[in-house]
Image 1: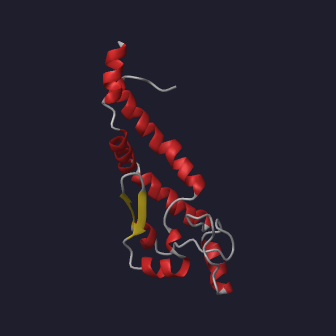
Image 2: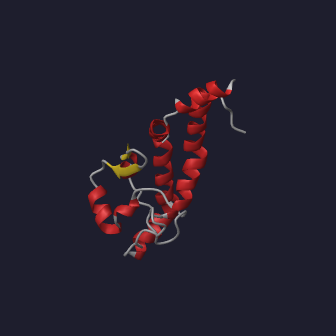
Image 3: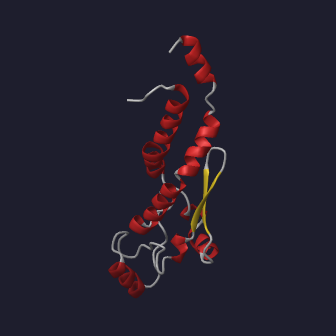
Length: 148
């Protein structure tokens, strides 16, 4: 490939478009990471944890069902409807998380809007495992350049 041809191909790149498409095509993986944060750790997007259960008996019952987050720490999972209702809206360069389930407002009031979204570690994981490969594939498709 000649330098003028490479320059033409590089100029054809639309990284804003590519980023938005990468976020759209990997939204399911972002939702799964958010669900796992809650279910396995009871952790919110800001890194803090969900408020502890007030009832010790209920905490023990929930720990019996799912011990992953630890005794007394909620996982926001009972029937599964709340987490099954998760969605992601793709903005220009970000994701907006939410749930269509009717309990969303109540759970947000209890623990804040931070119940939705990814922790810093999960943002890195999401980017490295899912978004970056999509961007690299786009760059390769447009320019012919390959990544190692």
